[in-house]
Amino acid sequence: MAAAGNETPPLLILHRFPSFTLSLGAAVLRSKYTVLDQYDVPPNPSFSSLSKSARLLFCAGPRPLTSDDLDRYPAVECVIGTSAGVNHFDLAALRRRGIRLTTAGDVFSDDVADYAIGLAVDVLRRVSAADRFVRAGSWPVQREYTLGSKVSGKRVGIVGLGSIGSRVAKRFEAFGCSIAYNSRKVKPNVSYTHYDSVADLASNTDILVVCCAFTNETYHMITKDVMKRLGKKGIIVNVGRGALIDEEELVGSLVRGEIGGAGLDVFEHEPRVPKELWTLDNVVLSAHKAVLTPESMGAIEELILSNIDAFFLNKPLQAELGLDEEML
Image (cartoon, rainbow, N blue to C red; front, side):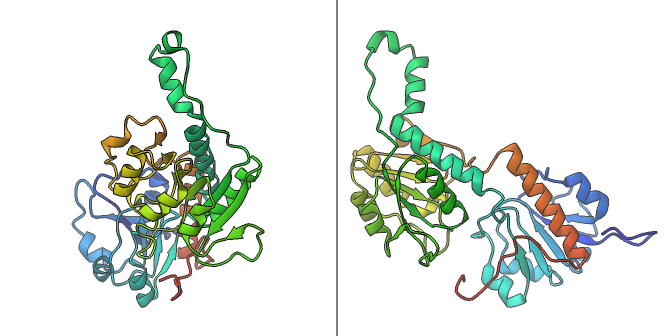
């Protein structure tokens, strides 16, 4: 917390992309702490010297935090993150240095789960396509419109039954859907069918929802074989990370009609989206917005500010990630 008298307020490094404008709690942070931002305008001439003694780093947005970055900030004891995903952090380097890490925890989980359901309903019932059909003035002319598919009673396969995946499952249960999943570990407290491989899960699924963590092991885990097993009536919903899916194979499968459709909030090379997908009525595209609601932004701001205060007061942190060997 800010010190009394003429004492310098605690140092806090702001780690961000140059184009990333900090809005979450910016005024509060700068009123209570000495915020060290290498992209300040005008530049802070003391950044280099002061940052070497800063104990806390606030990583705003998805800017990678590497071992080299940490070498430049040798006094850092804790990193405050703003996302549920941690693929932009060098977790091994953090663990090696004994640096603590907090994330968004489950702040975004309900919003992402809601969005996954929305994408699935949209793809199957062709809501966005119907909207375009009406707006184009086609209804009085063509009359007939391609039928969508029923959502209720579908077989749902969830890749990653974590905080988001478990919420997706509960929402689909309300549709009378059967649930199965693939996860790093079998979940002992759920009755859903577990499949050891994503390919086997896809073989028994109508809606494949991808919401697992992105790691070296999960890169391109949704392969051509997985899509082939999903089949011509199956759809994919991705609210995880774009590179969980082999995007080139996904585009080919959709263009050739080898799978039934896709609802995509994330892409492998954002913000670039394959042009082949733009005209497909069985594909719903979104600009990585599943987490963004006024409610979630308020909740993450509250969490970030609370954790920063807690660190300097030597109190327990919320949503702290355990950097165990198995995770790495």
